[in-house]
Length: 124
Image (cartoon, rainbow, N blue to C red):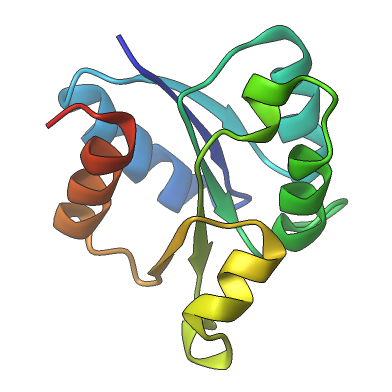
């Protein structure tokens, strides 16, 4: 079973994404901010990270950069999908430079989310 880590401060978005992805047979871990995402990564191996750009304590951009600089090569290369309500402020190139593999705009289209997660985890 593939493990997805959701870094999202909105309980509503976190719970909906969790339910949708658990229904697709993914194991879900959740964190409310970037620091918690990094804490979880110390003890867990994950197959994909969904990361909100706007979170308290440590935002998604800072968290993605920190993940890309982890000493554990496997963890530093895990695919990261940005979740943002400000997608129009970024180009795909911007997301790549920040360390993200792709992005999903808010409000989240859960069909798009499931498709992207399955594609990136090889769970087609």
